[in-house]
Each structure stands twice: as C-alpha cells, then as structure tokens.
Image (cartoon, rainbow, N blue to C red; front, side, top):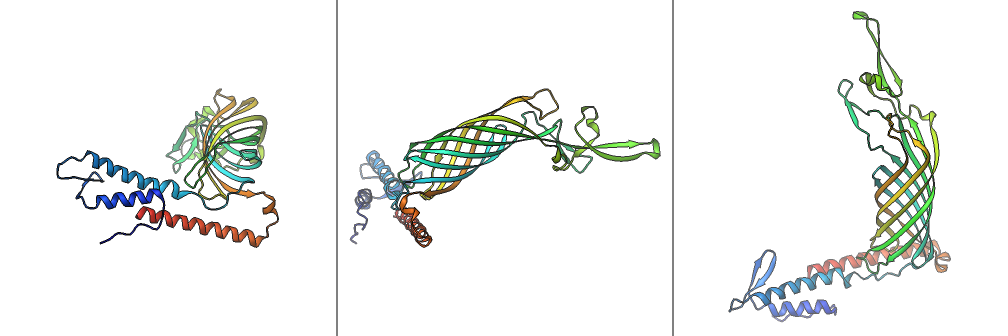
Length: 328
C-alpha cells in the first residue's frame, strides 16, 4: 500500500516520514519503551541510534517550530499583576503595575501586605480545652504594608509559546509595621474546696501563669490597640514569565527583601527582638497586559472584543495542531 507524504511541508516532519517509511520494512522489537530493530546480522547499534534520532525529531516537531506564535505581539505594553508569595518570615500578597519605558524596561509601582512570623514561634495544643491552639509566648501579631517603586529589565525575551521570559527587578520604598496585641484566655478560681468558683479573663501573655492559659482570644480582641512603626524596605528579584497567551502574565518569582525599623519589633515575650527582617521569597504571579499603542487607544470596545475572540481562536487552533503532531 502506497503511503502519502504529509501535507505539512515542515522539514522535520518530512524527515520523520521518510525515516519511518524506510524502517517500516524491518522487524521492530520493544526495549524499555524505545523501538529497536534488528537486521539479519544482529548488528543493532546504528539502528538504535536511528530510532533515538526519530524520537528526537518527533520531540523537536512538537516543542520547537510548531509552537511559534502566530498572533500579533503587543509591543507597547504595560502590565497589571498580583502575586501570592511565601517568605522565610511569613507570607504575603502584592499588586504591581509595570509602566513601559522601552522594549525591555519597565518602571514598577508595587504595594505589598505581609504577615510576619517570628522564627521562635511554637504552636501548642490545650488538650483540656477542646484542643485550642496558640503560640506560646507571642505578645503581638505583626503585619507589614509596603510601597515600592523600582525598575524591571528583561534579560531574555520570550519568542514562542513554549518560551520563558527572564526578568530582574529592584525596588525601594517605605514600610509601615503594624503591631496588634494578642490576648489569651486565663483560668481563675476563687474560694476553696467545694466552694471553688471558676471563671476566665482575657489578658496579655504572662509567663508566670502559663499553666492557666486555656487558649487564645478572638483575633479582633485588641484591634483598637494597634501600634504603627514606620521604616524602609528594599527588594531585588527574578521573574520567570511563561504564559502562552500574549495578553496574560503567568510567572514564578524569587527574591530577597530587607525591612529596617528604627526600633526593635516586639513579637515574642523573649528578649530576641529584631529591628530588621531579611526575607527570602518565592511566589506565583498572574495578571494581564495592557496595550498602550496609539492604535489601541482609538479602538472601540467591539473591536477589542473581536481581537480577543480571534486570539482565543488562534490559540485553540495551535493547540489542536500540537495534538495532531503528537498523534502523528
């Protein structure tokens, strides 16, 4: 039966077609999920290499030229993104606006909210009071509001759907530390013997009466006693952006930040208080790209919706083509 040459005139796919056509007359044997064939002399080395070469070409067809983006690139672009991140001292959220300077540079405006944990925090279960948990010795919850202005530079540009854009950024700005006192539920008793009366009171941590702690009070207890500590912060980081859609942002962020205060921050009852916090961070960022070109400014809402629909259609078509290549 005669085989037809594939319609796709890609050199890689054509090479696969002729290699498979040549090898179809030779018996195949399965060996660790790699097809290996033998000739009458039993010499298999060259044919093993040929099999691996076919698989390599197949992979290249799937993950290289077949992934080139056909939709129009947004060249004049700003970005609105947000991220959730974990740090060596807690966790946080941020919102970032990136304003285009030129093709590879942006000015960044960013706001962060971070929950700061002390490295000595130890959570305890009270088995005598419905397993309530609390952090032993913690006297204040500590939060940070940060404002940054900085610059982002694109080191490596993403040219296809499977690519990664690598960027670095540096930022500086003010930080406001927020201290909220923590209250605990203490057990008290009056009288003696059978006339004992028990009651509870909410008070701040007292190390001399730790055995009488039943648990922690509501988070909102002490909310009217907030204290604010101003300071400064700086951050550097790397961003690995990998979105397959040119109007969306999906990125993994890593970075280091340093927060400085004019006085030590009392989080725990111990004397181990710091006036600075060094954070190692990793986070996931999502957002969208804003087209700021002159052409985009005069477009009607209907035209913008039509372009988005076309972009989704192109992505769907490319996805289907990738699936066909994989099946081939």
